[in-house]
Length: 243
Image 1 (cartoon, helix red, strand yellow):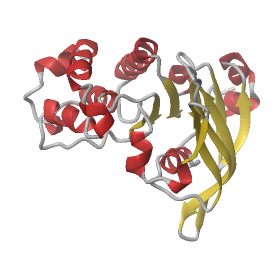
Image 2 (tube, one colour; image 1 turned 180 degrees about the vertical axis):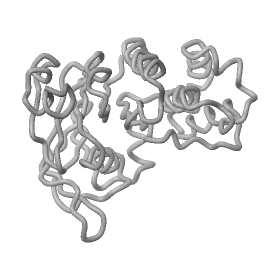
Image 3 (cartoon, one colour; image 1 turned 180 degrees about the horizontal axis):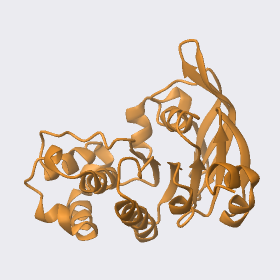
Image 4 (cartoon, helix red, strand yellow; image 1 turned 30 degrees about the horizontal axis):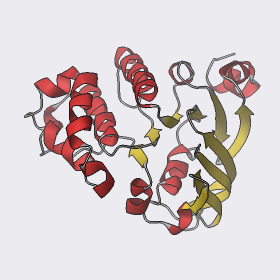
Protein backbone atom coordinates (compact mmCIF):
# COMPACT_ATOMS: atom_id res chain seq x y z
CA UNK A 1 0.00 0.00 0.00
CA UNK A 2 1.03 3.63 -0.46
CA UNK A 3 3.04 5.33 2.26
CA UNK A 4 2.94 8.93 3.42
CA UNK A 5 5.08 11.03 5.75
CA UNK A 6 2.98 13.51 7.71
CA UNK A 7 4.14 16.39 9.92
CA UNK A 8 1.45 18.28 11.80
CA UNK A 9 1.83 21.43 13.94
CA UNK A 10 5.36 20.63 15.07
CA UNK A 11 7.06 22.90 17.59
CA UNK A 12 10.72 22.28 18.32
CA UNK A 13 13.97 23.92 19.33
CA UNK A 14 17.08 23.69 21.45
CA UNK A 15 16.66 24.56 25.11
CA UNK A 16 14.98 27.95 25.39
CA UNK A 17 15.48 28.70 21.70
CA UNK A 18 12.36 27.98 19.62
CA UNK A 19 13.14 27.06 16.00
CA UNK A 20 9.98 25.51 14.57
CA UNK A 21 6.56 27.10 15.08
CA UNK A 22 3.58 24.94 14.11
CA UNK A 23 5.16 23.36 11.03
CA UNK A 24 2.93 21.11 8.91
CA UNK A 25 4.00 19.32 5.72
CA UNK A 26 3.36 15.99 4.05
CA UNK A 27 5.21 13.86 1.53
CA UNK A 28 3.25 11.28 -0.43
CA UNK A 29 4.64 8.11 -1.95
CA UNK A 30 6.68 8.65 -5.09
CA UNK A 31 6.94 12.42 -4.68
CA UNK A 32 10.00 14.62 -4.53
CA UNK A 33 9.14 17.47 -2.18
CA UNK A 34 11.51 20.36 -1.56
CA UNK A 35 11.70 22.34 1.68
CA UNK A 36 13.08 25.73 0.67
CA UNK A 37 14.62 28.19 3.09
CA UNK A 38 17.74 30.23 3.60
CA UNK A 39 20.20 29.41 6.40
CA UNK A 40 18.83 29.46 9.93
CA UNK A 41 15.15 29.08 9.09
CA UNK A 42 14.66 25.58 10.52
CA UNK A 43 15.08 23.18 7.60
CA UNK A 44 17.68 20.98 9.28
CA UNK A 45 15.81 21.03 12.59
CA UNK A 46 12.70 19.70 10.89
CA UNK A 47 14.69 16.94 9.20
CA UNK A 48 16.22 16.02 12.57
CA UNK A 49 12.77 15.89 14.14
CA UNK A 50 11.58 13.45 11.47
CA UNK A 51 14.65 11.27 12.09
CA UNK A 52 14.20 11.27 15.87
CA UNK A 53 17.38 13.25 16.47
CA UNK A 54 15.47 16.20 17.96
CA UNK A 55 12.35 15.61 20.04
CA UNK A 56 9.44 17.94 19.16
CA UNK A 57 7.90 19.88 22.02
CA UNK A 58 4.47 19.63 20.39
CA UNK A 59 2.82 18.29 17.27
CA UNK A 60 2.79 14.99 15.39
CA UNK A 61 5.11 13.22 12.99
CA UNK A 62 3.85 9.98 11.51
CA UNK A 63 4.53 7.45 8.80
CA UNK A 64 1.42 6.00 7.22
CA UNK A 65 2.27 2.76 5.46
CA UNK A 66 0.80 -0.69 4.83
CA UNK A 67 -2.49 0.41 6.35
CA UNK A 68 -0.88 1.44 9.64
CA UNK A 69 -0.05 4.81 11.18
CA UNK A 70 3.28 4.86 13.03
CA UNK A 71 4.04 7.70 15.45
CA UNK A 72 7.68 8.60 14.75
CA UNK A 73 7.96 10.85 17.81
CA UNK A 74 7.86 7.72 19.93
CA UNK A 75 10.58 5.95 17.95
CA UNK A 76 14.36 6.14 18.22
CA UNK A 77 16.48 7.11 15.23
CA UNK A 78 17.51 3.48 14.82
CA UNK A 79 13.86 2.38 14.75
CA UNK A 80 13.01 5.09 12.21
CA UNK A 81 15.80 3.88 9.92
CA UNK A 82 14.45 0.35 10.35
CA UNK A 83 11.10 1.61 9.03
CA UNK A 84 12.80 2.49 5.75
CA UNK A 85 13.62 6.18 6.22
CA UNK A 86 17.21 7.19 5.44
CA UNK A 87 19.04 10.51 5.82
CA UNK A 88 21.76 12.12 3.75
CA UNK A 89 22.87 14.64 6.38
CA UNK A 90 24.10 18.16 5.87
CA UNK A 91 27.90 18.12 5.73
CA UNK A 92 27.94 14.44 4.63
CA UNK A 93 28.97 13.11 8.10
CA UNK A 94 31.10 10.31 6.72
CA UNK A 95 33.63 8.27 8.64
CA UNK A 96 36.78 9.97 7.27
CA UNK A 97 39.27 7.34 8.43
CA UNK A 98 37.32 4.47 6.92
CA UNK A 99 37.42 3.54 3.25
CA UNK A 100 34.69 4.21 0.73
CA UNK A 101 33.58 0.59 0.84
CA UNK A 102 33.59 0.49 4.65
CA UNK A 103 31.38 3.59 4.74
CA UNK A 104 28.98 1.94 2.31
CA UNK A 105 28.80 -1.26 4.31
CA UNK A 106 28.03 0.72 7.46
CA UNK A 107 25.05 2.12 5.58
CA UNK A 108 23.67 -1.43 5.51
CA UNK A 109 23.97 -1.83 9.28
CA UNK A 110 20.24 -2.24 9.89
CA UNK A 111 19.11 -5.85 9.91
CA UNK A 112 16.61 -5.35 7.09
CA UNK A 113 19.34 -4.09 4.75
CA UNK A 114 22.04 -6.68 5.40
CA UNK A 115 20.36 -9.25 3.19
CA UNK A 116 20.36 -6.69 0.35
CA UNK A 117 24.10 -5.93 0.40
CA UNK A 118 24.81 -8.17 -2.60
CA UNK A 119 22.20 -6.20 -4.56
CA UNK A 120 22.74 -2.71 -3.18
CA UNK A 121 26.55 -2.54 -3.27
CA UNK A 122 26.79 -3.32 -7.02
CA UNK A 123 23.95 -0.87 -7.63
CA UNK A 124 25.82 1.91 -5.81
CA UNK A 125 29.00 1.16 -7.75
CA UNK A 126 27.01 1.22 -10.99
CA UNK A 127 25.31 4.50 -10.08
CA UNK A 128 28.58 6.07 -8.90
CA UNK A 129 31.42 4.47 -10.91
CA UNK A 130 33.96 6.67 -9.14
CA UNK A 131 33.15 4.96 -5.86
CA UNK A 132 34.07 1.61 -7.36
CA UNK A 133 37.40 3.05 -8.49
CA UNK A 134 38.00 4.59 -5.06
CA UNK A 135 36.59 1.78 -2.94
CA UNK A 136 39.88 1.41 -0.99
CA UNK A 137 40.41 5.17 -0.58
CA UNK A 138 39.82 6.86 2.78
CA UNK A 139 36.60 8.86 2.68
CA UNK A 140 38.25 11.87 4.31
CA UNK A 141 40.70 12.25 1.44
CA UNK A 142 37.97 12.70 -1.18
CA UNK A 143 36.73 16.01 -2.59
CA UNK A 144 33.46 17.56 -1.39
CA UNK A 145 31.53 16.41 -4.43
CA UNK A 146 32.89 12.88 -4.16
CA UNK A 147 31.99 12.78 -0.47
CA UNK A 148 28.44 13.92 -1.27
CA UNK A 149 28.07 11.07 -3.76
CA UNK A 150 29.34 8.65 -1.11
CA UNK A 151 26.88 10.01 1.46
CA UNK A 152 23.98 9.45 -0.95
CA UNK A 153 25.19 5.95 -1.78
CA UNK A 154 25.60 5.12 1.90
CA UNK A 155 21.96 6.07 2.51
CA UNK A 156 20.87 3.84 -0.39
CA UNK A 157 22.67 0.91 1.23
CA UNK A 158 19.99 0.92 3.95
CA UNK A 159 17.32 -0.02 1.35
CA UNK A 160 15.13 3.00 2.13
CA UNK A 161 11.65 3.76 0.88
CA UNK A 162 11.88 7.40 1.93
CA UNK A 163 15.05 9.45 1.46
CA UNK A 164 15.65 12.68 3.38
CA UNK A 165 18.37 14.87 1.87
CA UNK A 166 19.59 17.83 3.91
CA UNK A 167 21.31 20.66 2.00
CA UNK A 168 23.07 18.59 -0.71
CA UNK A 169 24.48 21.73 -2.37
CA UNK A 170 26.34 23.13 0.64
CA UNK A 171 30.04 23.66 -0.02
CA UNK A 172 29.92 22.46 -3.62
CA UNK A 173 30.87 24.28 -6.80
CA UNK A 174 27.89 25.02 -9.10
CA UNK A 175 28.83 22.33 -11.63
CA UNK A 176 28.97 19.73 -8.83
CA UNK A 177 25.64 20.90 -7.41
CA UNK A 178 24.05 20.30 -10.81
CA UNK A 179 25.60 16.82 -10.94
CA UNK A 180 24.51 15.87 -7.40
CA UNK A 181 20.93 17.10 -7.88
CA UNK A 182 20.71 15.24 -11.19
CA UNK A 183 21.95 12.06 -9.53
CA UNK A 184 19.29 12.33 -6.80
CA UNK A 185 16.62 12.56 -9.50
CA UNK A 186 18.06 9.56 -11.36
CA UNK A 187 18.26 7.40 -8.24
CA UNK A 188 14.77 8.40 -7.15
CA UNK A 189 13.37 7.17 -10.44
CA UNK A 190 15.43 4.00 -10.58
CA UNK A 191 14.70 2.94 -6.99
CA UNK A 192 11.14 4.32 -6.84
CA UNK A 193 12.03 6.44 -3.83
CA UNK A 194 10.04 9.09 -2.02
CA UNK A 195 12.24 12.13 -1.42
CA UNK A 196 12.12 15.10 0.95
CA UNK A 197 14.96 17.51 0.22
CA UNK A 198 15.85 20.54 2.34
CA UNK A 199 17.66 23.03 0.13
CA UNK A 200 18.39 26.73 -0.32
CA UNK A 201 19.41 26.52 -3.98
CA UNK A 202 16.00 27.21 -5.53
CA UNK A 203 16.93 26.79 -9.19
CA UNK A 204 18.59 23.41 -8.66
CA UNK A 205 15.99 22.06 -6.23
CA UNK A 206 13.05 22.82 -8.50
CA UNK A 207 14.66 20.88 -11.34
CA UNK A 208 13.67 17.66 -9.60
CA UNK A 209 10.85 18.64 -7.22
CA UNK A 210 7.18 17.87 -7.84
CA UNK A 211 6.14 20.54 -5.36
CA UNK A 212 7.43 22.23 -2.23
CA UNK A 213 7.21 24.41 0.83
CA UNK A 214 8.89 27.67 1.83
CA UNK A 215 9.96 27.93 5.47
CA UNK A 216 10.74 31.35 6.96
CA UNK A 217 11.75 31.83 10.60
CA UNK A 218 10.50 28.36 11.49
CA UNK A 219 7.07 28.71 9.89
CA UNK A 220 5.72 27.34 6.62
CA UNK A 221 4.88 30.54 4.76
CA UNK A 222 3.86 28.97 1.46
CA UNK A 223 2.94 25.58 0.01
CA UNK A 224 3.40 25.29 -3.73
CA UNK A 225 1.38 22.54 -5.37
CA UNK A 226 3.80 22.66 -8.30
CA UNK A 227 7.20 24.13 -9.09
CA UNK A 228 5.41 26.69 -11.24
CA UNK A 229 3.48 27.91 -8.19
CA UNK A 230 6.76 28.17 -6.30
CA UNK A 231 8.37 30.23 -9.06
CA UNK A 232 5.44 32.64 -9.13
CA UNK A 233 5.37 33.18 -5.36
CA UNK A 234 6.48 36.58 -4.07
CA UNK A 235 8.69 35.06 -1.35
CA UNK A 236 10.62 33.12 -3.98
CA UNK A 237 10.99 36.21 -6.13
CA UNK A 238 12.29 38.13 -3.13
CA UNK A 239 14.64 35.58 -1.57
CA UNK A 240 15.76 33.45 -4.51
CA UNK A 241 15.20 35.20 -7.82
CA UNK A 242 16.24 38.71 -6.87
CA UNK A 243 13.03 40.25 -8.21
